[in-house]
Length: 330
Ligand code: ASP
Image 1: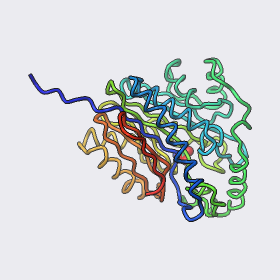
Image 2 (image 1 turned 90 degrees about the horizontal axis):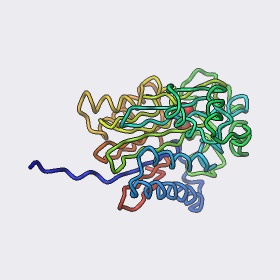
Image 3 (image 1 turned 180 degrees about the vertical axis):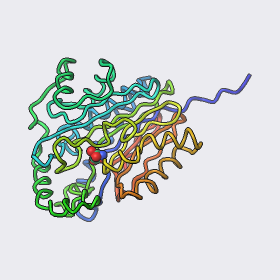
């Protein structure tokens, strides 16, 4: 009888965006807020996986929690567009079936990730945008809100600073997407320079992978702009044969390098390990076009990789049977 290799323990990993450090400005209490929020969300998802829940349900639960938390740029607390509106993007993918769903430029769906999942499960499409996506979400019974539900005073202050620095942004310098001004230092990562998408990836007890990502996009973005988050293969991807990936960063560069899919392709075609593929993409491929950010990834063997080329990334993971880990800085 051939020896059966034991199934790896289920694992969930989450991120709350990557960016620049303001470590010298923050108090241990402020840092603790972020660790607490990430830790609570991980604990709930870990329990779900421990009880035999699916990777798809675990990433949905985790992103629900991250969207509801105003500390992160997704759902309530999302950033503003140039016109002081909100346009949110989200995507989910099931590694077992390669089914995927996404929404872009929605401003009335309380939980964009649930709308993405509804597109996957209740339509024959992959990506719905704007008013059409909102009408579909409503027809599925999802909770709708007024657009100002997403607004917070600190995000409005960020927009005002970004508008004031428009001269820099119009320099056609890609790196100017990262705002030059310092924040008041309320958060561990400089809120003005943070790329604050949220995401989750998971492996469940049945060996299935899933990935989910949700974002308000980038402060001061043009109305109608779509980032990498809802584009399957760019910011979000899952395939049981390789890995589940959720990205955060300067979306345009992640779209141009098809970041999430590139990791799976390297594993499938070049036989690279998850970590080798993820490190190469984040530390070598993205920087060639000034792409900044990071990603979280798990594979079907339960390996985990969380590389980023910024100074920090809100992140954490929980393996069933082990303590929850949360990290912000390097
Ligand atoms: N990748 C997101 C976007 O470009 C932004 C982020 O990660 O914060 O919309």
